[in-house]
Length: 276
Ligand code: SAM
Image 1 (cartoon, protein in one colour):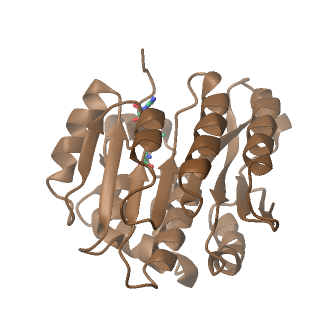
Image 2: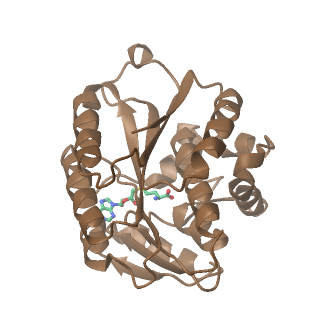
């Protein structure tokens, strides 16, 4: 039973780090003429209304400030967020991917929540590039569809981590994808929640240990909004991270330049960019 609904959290600090990093990877892939494939395993509803009651209730939406901050490294993300804001909306990862990709590129989306898949199908009618949508477990989709025919591309994994088993599932799936598709880029979003620190570090270590290159090929980007000690509830999100396996070498400088500006705009506590 899936209970997580992204409409409560769209455009929050976690979406910003995830979508900003994703836009940088897509821009790097576009530097070559050859087509690429994006596989988004946990797609969500695609497009979110900023005036949605659920979003207003959590008061988490901060993407407007980032879109207006004029951070040059993440211009394509900010431009897309501003374009959607004109009609009172925020682009989820599928909308952002579709907006940034080219006609020759391919988009594959997977979603398992019955309501979210309906919303995703309706949203996709408005995307500039038509995706292939699977009402299927995202981990299964990723393994079944890699390597894609294009050979180049990115697998975006953004679970809700409702289930503690998601940490292990992510590591297991990424290890399998790397074997099947050594050249594929994998972008994994992960939450920073105090009671899951052990699971997070075990997940990262398992993914890192499966690296086939002799040099660091993983970028680990983190944004901490608060210190763990400040958070009251056990499950409170004090920040989040993006783990980018096989990261394009052009993006680490860009993300390192963008992070202090993102952190300052959001009044975040700290940020970090590490290569592993
Ligand atoms: N990636 C989206 C974005 O950035 O706009 C947000 C995704 S949200 C954090 C996670 C989504 O994964 C939810 O819509 C949830 O219904 C879906 N989900 C949960 N378990 C799943 C699974 N095993 N396979 C596919 N989707 C799943």
